Length: 211
Length: 211
Image 1: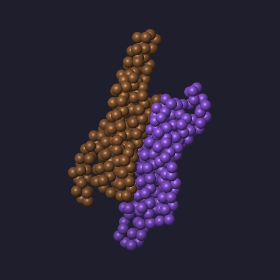
Image 2 (image 1 turned 90 degrees about the vertical axis):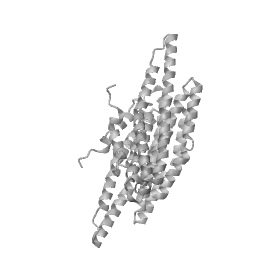
Image 3 (image 1 turned 30 degrees about the vertical axis):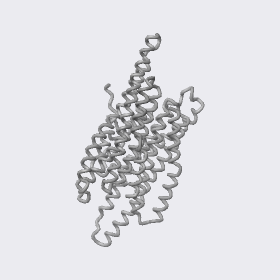
Image 4 (image 1 turned 180 degrees about the vertical axis):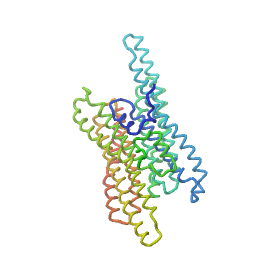
């Protein structure tokens, strides 16, 4: 496709595309973008803590955190597009001919195959957003007080991304015929979600006490 | 300023700017952008519900909702920049000379003046995000089932935007010397926040039951 990738579009154009009656981009891309914003804010907290004499004690931790948050931001930025790609493949599978019995069977098999991928994509996004919640917590605990509110915004963005990605896992597993696969993926999601509610709430409260 | 406005920058460049050691853009812009993404998703749900025979009954409601969500998106998109502008004015006030007593007094007065504005900006953002939570709820209640997960993402994005904007209200009121003004603004914020937690949770649950 020669079309410009979402991450290279302006924010204004992205929002227009989002609001339009086109099915993509949609919530899956927003989930990834919220995660990427969270990771970027964690990086900002690190960058504004590193090198400050007052925070020399956490310098090494902040360097390590920055490395993680930048890798995570890269991963999440890539997921903005991954959601659109898999959605398009799913729509293509649904558009396959369904006249003959053979066609019906082929179409159904194609849909089921893409649905598995369409489950993995938001599951990966959920996992990355949960990681962003954890990194935000470290930023809130150790980052410079001057940018502590940014760690608070980071945790809220990551949490929203996680809960959003989860919705897309629920939808796609619901249409899966391979119930063993579906249940395994839902179990993975539950594992990812476990404890993150509490961690997000705690981190937000911690930030509030430091303001 | 001849510099390109944030909304006209690519997502990738915005994320780079966010992650950098520059103090702007920061969490305030992310709060506004999350709100704008929420409003855009509400518009998407409307646009993909309007005109569908199955949803003829809610057509008028969806038209009215779309009008509100598009106006709100416009407002929130403008706030991405407003946060940076007021932050820059605040930094400029802090940079004023403070040698003589007269200078100290002038500088302090200038800071206090901009701090009031720096309280209003995130308060407006919080108010707009709370409105986005309400619009997301209507989208979740009445929108096409085919895009119901997008209403769920919309509510999470709006909620994250609201809680993020609130942090910036807390910070700036804490530095205000005019305690009457500060308390009035905190009371306004509490009014905005009231009931939104429950509404966001309810809306998310509603979406989950519809998947």
